[in-house]
Image (cartoon, rainbow, N blue to C red; front, side, top):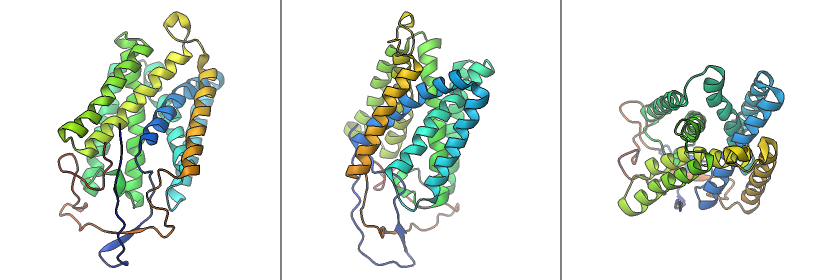
Length: 298
C-alpha cells in the first residue's frame, strides 16, 4: 500500500482559532507498513514463547507491565519519537496476542466467537471515538483523549487480528502459510479500492491496519510451528529472535532517517482547531464518508 500524506505548513501565528500541533504518530509511508507487519509477526511468536517458558501466570502480568510502561512513556512524550512509539506497538502486539489466545486456550471459546467478540469491541471503540471527537483520522491526534482512543483502537485491532488469523488457520483449516497468502490478497483490497475507486482514506487505512495483524501473525506461526504442521520448525524462540532483529533494524532506520516525521520543527506546526460540533465532538470531515485532507492516503 502506497502511503503519502501532504501537510502544508501553516505559517500563521497562534490565535484563538489555532492550535500548536506536536505530532504523536508517524507519517504513514510505505516503510510504516513494513515495520507494522514485522511487529505483528514478532508479537505473535514472542507472546507464545513467553507463555511457554514462563507460563501465563507470570508471562501475562509481565506483558501488561511492559505495555503500561511503554504507554506511559508515549503519553508523557510531547511529540512523535520512533523508539517510544514503536515500543508501544511491540508491547501491544505481544499483549494483544495473549489477550486473544486467553479466551480460546484458557476458557475454550471458539476462535470464530473470539473474532466476533473483538470485532464488536473494535466497532464500539470506533463509535465512541467518532461520537466524542467527530473524526477517526490518525493525523488529528493532538490531544490526550484522542491519543487514548487511538491506542485503544490499536489494542483492539491486534486482538481481533490475532483471533482472525488463528480462525482461518485452524478452524477453516487453511494452515498458517495459506492464511498468510489469503491476508496478502485481502490487504490489497483497501489499497486498490482507495487508489482506483475513491475509497475513503480513513476507512482504507483502518481496514489495512486490522489486516496487518493476521498477515504478520500467520507467517510468524508458519515460521515457528513444526514441519509436520506445514511450518519451518524454527520454534517460537528462534522466530522471535529473527523477527525481533528485523523490528529493531526497522525502528533504527526510522529513528535515524526520520523519514516518517511530518515536520522537524521542534516548535511544532500551527494548525486550525475545528469548531465544536453540536454533539460535543469536532466538526471535521472525511470520517467514513467524506474525504479527509488530514487522513493517511492509502
